[in-house]
Image 1 (cartoon, rainbow, N blue to C red):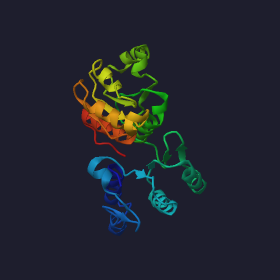
Image 2: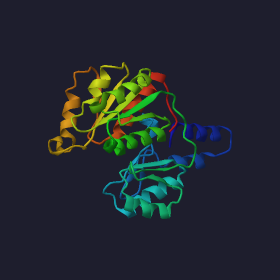
Image 3: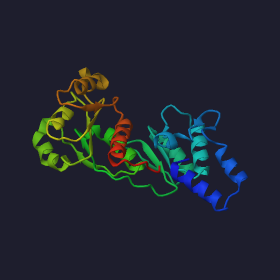
Image 4: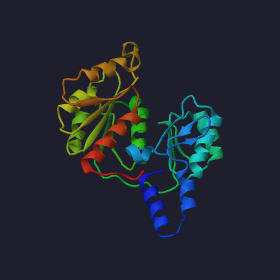
Length: 256
């Protein structure tokens, strides 16, 4: 239950459209709904403005079906990450309304319009191989109401590509930067723009990239001031940091 839903419920009680028993039955499921294999955090949007997202990796198909069915029956919008193509095909047969993106391995299941969140969010992606992580960030931001502007294949090995786009980012409220290899892109962008930066190291690279460890350490040791660094391949986490920045800047308590 989000803030808007709770406000509407209380207004319906006030207006006599629902009685006390109806409202108590709905509120009985706060703060969580026990699904045996999972406990859906119904109360989370009221606490931190983020509705619970399904991390699909390693979850059994039966568990995913039960979670999605419960959320669907409650009328909520649903977002999931790390849903592999095979599992997605089976779920899309059960829930044809699902919008699955095989690149980011995320899905959207919308039952009502997304409330837009004001803000200018830029998304820079160093190389084409980093796009799946960048798209996870983009789809996450979109689910929570922000259409980020994407600038792809702007890595440091070809600086003219970056320099042609960087001026467009100078007035962004926040910038997400996705890069693998040695993870140099956030340091360069940090020296050229004043916006808050969220850096995402990826596991893209040869042997001594160590599955993203090299990029992660490079970003953590950046000489550009004030860069936030999230976990390896964590586009979802980067988008959530950006959303907190936008909400704080606008002083908004969003409906999600």
